[in-house]
Length: 148
Image (tube, rainbow, N blue to C red; front, side):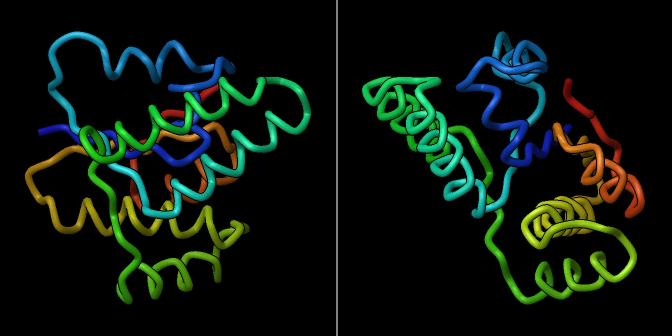
């Protein structure tokens, strides 16, 4: 079974129109042959991104609340959420020694790598809109889909 790991920048594109939104939304249309995975840290990151858009007037309050509710429902029903255990944290600490990633970005990369290591019969694609994070994911052997 294929796994698509979406970091927060990719996952947000399901809810907010940005370059690459169509590609992300296509993951959820029609018969599903892949499963969607993300890190537990995507919740606070998506909440922060929606609140920031609300504050800057890009979306109104009602829309921000609706999008957050959709995210919560989808997270419960459609996403495999990877918790941050000691192995993932240790891997992220190793990754930042060789890759110029922020901590949260390294945690996403480490979560995806951890998932691959435990799913030997699965292919995984790491989705992100962050070039630096894409390079970091590639450096640990992940296939990458870089969004607009």
